Length: 135
Image 1 (tube, rainbow, N blue to C red):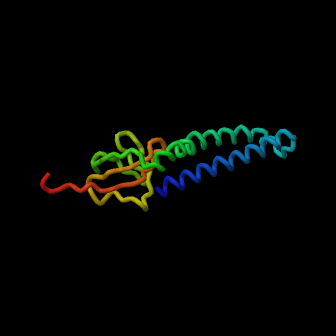
Image 2 (image 1 turned 120 degrees about the vertical axis):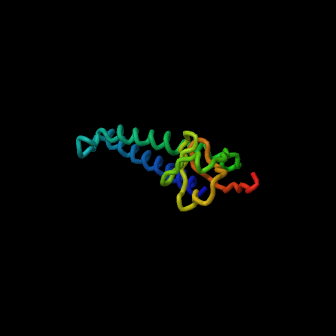
Image 3 (image 1 turned 90 degrees about the horizontal axis):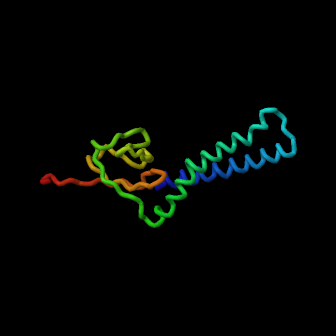
């Protein structure tokens, strides 16, 4: 949950900062106070950065905010054999889920119940599924 919250705050702050820089760059262009010829293209570069940051990072996190707040995030049960573990992500059935490696460990058991965000694919909670020896 902390990893998702920090990502939400960071992506939102990034969008706000890029929007402020874009506004300042446009004002400099409109007043024709550019010091370098390449700075005329700065609004174009900042617009591309703003589009990527908002569409790729901030909007998925913001759209998941409602489901995280009311606790209706999807839950999936996976085994260690079904998932491909990376450094800070794991791939389950073609979905790449991001997690904080300091918060969650996947080496303790064979089966896990993973609660994650639907659009931004951040793992919110991991619980170990205990299997009885008689099954």
